[in-house]
Length: 342
Ligand code: ADP
Ligand code: TRP
Image (cartoon, rainbow, N blue to C red; front, side, top):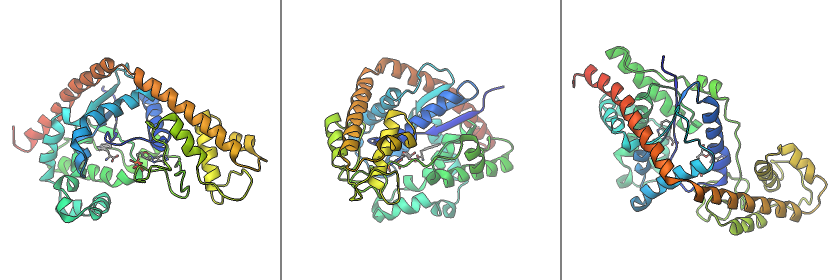
């Protein structure tokens, strides 16, 4: 019997920061290492999704390759036959299944999607694309083509996963068993363990999470920041005037955030790090230690990134894309037959 499939799409057109690294990248890589063997793990770049909101197309292709290298530098294994790493647009069945599913999807159903409402409210009418509206259908195709059961996604994507289950059930009841219905959001949480909710905060405003949507970039440590510049950002992180190092996210969010970053970088527990700094009455020492750690982490990471073997990466991606084209076409053909196209 073939293995159950775990599948997730990782966006490729972002500059990644340490929040993404510790909150998303590392957990995903750990999950991959832990589950491959018992499961087929599909990790793909939803490149067709990346311009549902306006972007700079001249950098997209390079950025996707760059982010794939970032995953490898962060530890994603390239030598595991159960792990498939591929780009959505290199498997044309994603687009073809989307067109078919579109005709079984309601306009009202898509209009109610929270992400569509959020994102479209930030764009003028002329800039809201049909692509953005159709985003969940393409996402459903991504999942259903491989019969994926487990799809680790954040809360903001749960509604899209529910839609995927709905459309799979809708076609199954109309045409017979075409699709594997993915596990419910609740079952996904049981399977993966509910997200621990790690949130690194913005250094300049520690009441907000570190997020690339902060345009000044002052409170964000990007993985491609120069180590020296990143150390400076830590040294000028906003703190408070309490005058004592306490782990207290409520009243001392800036200090607690630095302790958190310290713990993640050193691999020690948050409690141990807090204990280590307990009793200090000025913040200079904590900042200096964290600045040094960040500097070392980034230079080490950037060295690993330079050392990524592009040939090995491309060989892996192309092998995955060939295998995924075969898997996806089997499902697509079944659907084409069911709806009367074949
Ligand atoms: P951003 O807010 O920078 O746009 P995204 O919303 O694209 O980040 O999130 C991508 C992934 O990174 C998600 O899985 C999210 O949970 C994780 N993530 C984003 N920001 C942080 C943060 N500050 N701390 C921990 N994890 C984060
Ligand atoms: N929509 C997801 C996000 O914004 C990315 C994505 C696209 C995805 N297709 C998917 C995730 C299929 C899981 C499964 O993060």
